[in-house]
View (cartoon, rainbow, N blue to C red):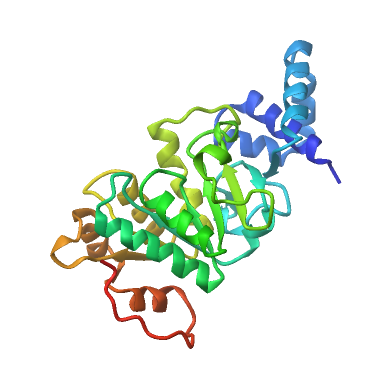
Length: 283
């Protein structure tokens, strides 16, 4: 069985050789061809890649499309939707039931309260909360889940070397079994609108249910909701009476389930429980 270092080397070489995600995936799936192509890489570049892999291996792991631990949720029509996932934290969380959250960075007071409640409900259910590690809704829901002892998965819109847990998510325990950080991108890939949109497939793909807290008439949260529907996930969109955002209304018209209260949200996400009913509205 290849070592973690060997796996990282293979993926880094595949990224260098193939460049695009689909080609990287195909190269990784043909080990003999990849071995031959690695032999054609000039010695200075090969040495740099191996040094970089050795440095990453001290704190970062990788699961590629040909790895038995690659999440089956991210395989569609027999093909992995991303070639590999770099990770930090507890990989076993990929085997747990997951709920994804998406919403505005510039969240309203109503949306902020709902995002916090959502994080608490997911944690209390024993499920894992998946988010895109953005400001606003993502951070509020993730912090709430973590504060209740819940597990969280962060899907980065950039390479994993850009993640700073102490600065960005101090409440997520990366040293124990409650946190996992994932990136589908080359380790040093910077943030861009393209990468932010691109991670939606992983966020929605991992989860059985996707909850949109607040979405505008365009942008990432609306795109995430549509991606969830495209992937066949259960899409839940929160409503706030006359204050329901336009993007939420669009998603409901396209097939999302509208949810207006904590009770309804809990019922949509969890099996029946003996918890005392909560009559308050989300806002």
